Every structure is written in structure tokens, then in C-alpha cells.
Image (cartoon, rainbow, N blue to C red; front, side, top):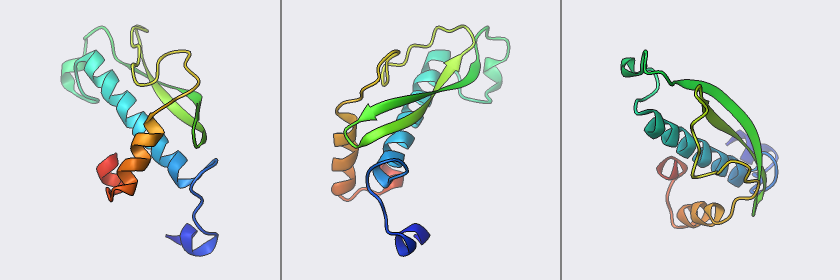
Length: 114
């Protein structure tokens, strides 16, 4: 709200509202994919001694319809995680921005979309 009252809200471009929204949706989806791949949630004792675990993330810049978005892609220790939402070596993302924008335009809140 302070940004809206001060400088005005930027919708697109680096640091814009839509860029941050797309980033949040992508990162949450990637974390969910990794959770399914590993078979246990973060900090779950079931993962102890499982042979594979989370191993941080790698920054990746993806070109979208609203501009470049830097996303943190999670990794696993064994290197077997292959995300489907944002495939390896993919630098362009199509379609997801349209979905997020249409959900927001339809009256959903940012929390609902996330």
C-alpha cells in the first residue's frame, strides 16, 4: 500500500505486481513438485535417511509475456528432480501469465491464487 500511495503501482516490468505474482506462483508450484518427487514435506522426519533430500535452489530468469522473471528452482541432492512446470533449459514461459491474470481479473485475491 505504501508503494501505491507513494510512486504508484507498476503492473509489469522488474519488480512489478504481475512479475512478483508470477514468480510467487511458479516458486510455490516448483516446491510442490519437489515435495511430490521426494515423497515427504519439508522438515518432515520421514525424510531423514531417505537417500535424497532438498539441496537449495538455483536462480533462473524466465521470459514471460509481462517481462523477465527471476525464479528460484529447487534442487535435490541426487539430481533426479526434473520440474514439469518449468522444464530444464526452458527460458520462455507461455500460458501461465494468462491464467494468473485472468484469475486476478476475475476477482480472486493474491492469496487465493497462490
